[in-house]
Image (cartoon, rainbow, N blue to C red; front, side):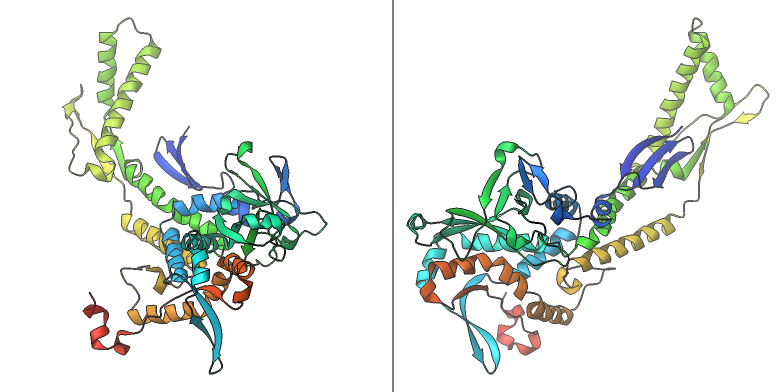
Length: 451
């Protein structure tokens, strides 16, 4: 009977008498299956954590952690999301006022020493970067508001903001029959991977219209997901099964390459060779019983099999050879070893795997919401032209930056309104410099002359 030697994704590799066989079956529900098949009512089924009823994030209340683990094994996702974050961040945050010119909305960038002095008292740029990372991955941002001492006497003042990790935040389940995000009054923070009770803390929800109510509070800023009342869902949520397949493929190919002897060769050994081995064992150990002789002979077979496998299997053994001695049996017949190759159609196998990989990569990248021209993805050795990248960048800046910017910077702009009510109309935004085609740039200012 074969034994399962390794499991990779949905594939089990079974060692049999005929060799190693890869069998693809649903041995257990995958991450994608548990998330996408009957996702259930996360919003209406609370779970208890450290004695507090919270709104679960995913069926196992660990969606951020599972997404993190999935992306860390993927060869495309982290790079695409990092590029998307970089495009959203542009040249960084700046203060601005909105103006109307020629019936167009424009941003007039301003320098306000008073507001800038407050921003410089805490690392606001790090906050903005962290908020954009949280948004691109989970489409929402948890922010902790730290108020100044003046809040004790009723004077509103936000001292600084802190961007929390999504994996460490959950909403406390609100009261009522049909709870909504607006009804959440508290948040629970802590280690939801190990569930160490000492690490959990409960914070009230921040009320921007009554900022003096609490000295420290938490607020969830997010883009509403259709059909969900609480947490937002990642833009690549539907691509999770493809992410799993893309992650498993390299390991499957590596395992097959390292164990190719099982499917690539049949080793023929002469029966006379083993009869002589058995006779020699009996002569060396006349006191052995039949079981001991059989066990010793089986050990010799295993050692020889491992030796042949070590020589013949794996791409790192190129140049090695196997030697044996031909001999003649008692009837005068020539006996010899034979290693017979099996037709593997390796080219078809590799081509099929490459096609699967391309489909998985395409399905994966489309889910991240960034054009391949901006993702730095090279397909079949070809990359997009500069014109394609430029037009993709223009579309991205024109259509895909405003909502992420409003959500990621909502907490800071609320703090500006609270701290500086006399500076009405001043907001923090992201400055992005548009790149022109080289044809539209004077020769002296072109990139080639600036290096």
